[in-house]
Amino acid sequence: CGLREAMTAEQYQCYKLEFCEAAERWVSLALFQGVSNAPKLRADVTSGKISSAVLLDPTHLAGGFHVLAAVNQAVMREEGRQLKTKSLLSEVIFCLSASTNISESFRRFGLKDTSQSVLAAVLHSSRSSNEVTTVLDQISGEMVPLDALSSLHSSEEIKKVFKIPPEESEISSLENSVVTRIVTKDVT
Image (cartoon, rainbow, N blue to C red; front, side, top):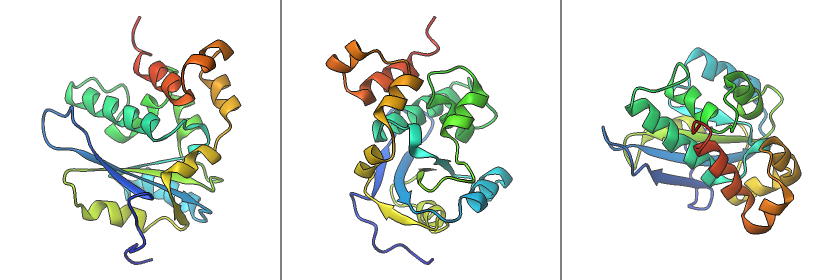
């Protein structure tokens, strides 16, 4: 693969996690379509060969803010030593869901062997990081702008999964409705 020199600001976006207390943390998001090596990627994540990234099937992702909210929530849980899963990366997947069922979160958002699109969320400790290109170079597919995420999901399916009633859709965006549910799932 080599270094992806065609990375543009619209395709690969880097965000500083502002609420981190312990150290500076960043997350970079990249979306790929036409992915041909999902089984290998999944095996590399499972074995720990890919250890700084969460690779997601974007079918049920409402948007980039959905992913950023989950990453931020997982990092805050890690800093507070309140992880509900075994690692920060698995906690990100769990935090994407409004469900408190970890297995369901992995089934819905985790990379599948049949995934043809992948959203990579790479966690790193500096603005410019070799970790990002190392992970992205392993994905065999076409990197597309993050805006293409909306074409990869069914709004109706997301409304069903997150139990968003029609009335709410009239006053809130789909992504805001989803994020509200994921950040408040632990509130009783």
